[in-house]
Structures are given as structure tokens and as C-alpha cells.
Amino acid sequence: MVSIYQLKPAFQNLLRPLVKRLHARSVTANQITLLAGACSVLLGCLIALFAQHAWLFMLIPLWMILRMALNAIDGMLAREFGQQSHLGAYLNELCDIVADSALILPFALVPGVSAFAVVLVALLAVFSEYTGVLGPMVGASRRYDGPMGKSDRAFVLGALAIAIALGWLSAAWINAVFAVIAGLLVFTLINRVRQGLKEVRENAPSA
Image (cartoon, rainbow, N blue to C red; front, side, top):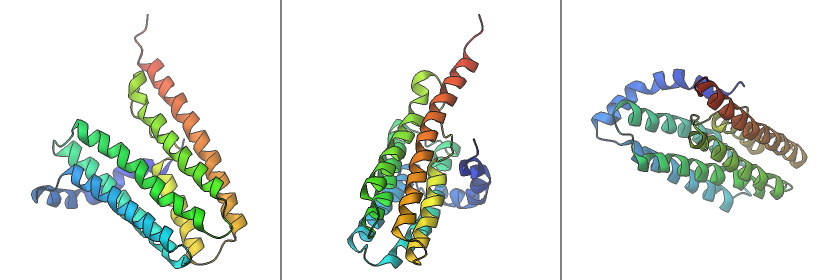
């Protein structure tokens, strides 16, 4: 299933010189993870408090790009510089779902937008990530399958935030977009289960 996540290797190659400099300055993967999570929550709170100012939604796509870079950086620091840890694994998953929720929920405060649809998308985003995390529990890898993985959500929500900031979409269209996102998240959840089970079968020793 096609996903923006498949572009990650090329993105990492662009960031590698910066990662090396950060490591040289003793910056750790966990520090980057916590920074990305905290900034996402702060931005979400800022937009929620002043949601009547539509232009603030323009900050979401800008932050989404920076957040994706930080997410790639913390992973590279962990893998390439021996900073992997059990605590880091917990922080990586928990900060991601907290950040996702913090950046999705403010859309519910846009006049005319269905709070139910927005909360549903936030919950399905958590469920889909949890499904990915369950992969190792059944003998598969951590699943990142699409079509609405973390990177895909960042792209779609960033584009939607730009449209809101510029007044391009009515509430009805925004609700329709969230309905589509919800449907794709359900598909993503099912796809991750199917691909995880497929991986387990393929890795099982033949009789």
C-alpha cells in the first residue's frame, strides 16, 4: 500500500549531516522525542485557545514538516549512534500519539466542523498506531503500512489547515475530508493487521 512513509530513507539522507552535528553536541534521541511532543502539545493548545483566528492554522503545516524532521532525527540518533533504549521506545510511541491528538483536536473548534468527526479521527489515529505497535507481540515487525500512516496524516491535515487558514473550504467540505480520513484510517488499521499476520506466516518455519 502506497504511503508517504516510503519516502523516509531519502528524507533521512538529507538530515544525516545535521544528525551528526547534533550527536557531536551530545544531543540525545530522547531529548529530540520529548521536544517534538512538547512543542506539538503547546501548538495544539495555542490554536485551540485562539481558534477564532483562522490564520493560526497555517502554523500546523509548518510544524508538521519540522516535526517529521525531528521524528526522523530521533530515530537516526537512536539507531546510528547507539542510543536505542527501552525508555526511548516508550517515549517514541507515546509522544507520537499525544502529539497527533494535540494537533488534530483543535480542528473541532472550527465553526461548523463536526466535533464528532474530528474526535473520531483522533481516536482512529491512536488505534491505527496501536495496531502497528502490536506487530512485535505476534512475531511481526512494527507495522507502518498505509494508506493513512503518520506521515500521510501530517500531509493531509497540513493541507487542510492551509485551506482553513485561507478560507478556501466550507465547514461541510472540512467535515467531508475528515470522513474520508476516518475511512482511510479504518483501512489502515485493517491493513496493518493483515500485513502483520502475513509477515508472521511468511516467517514461520516450514514443516
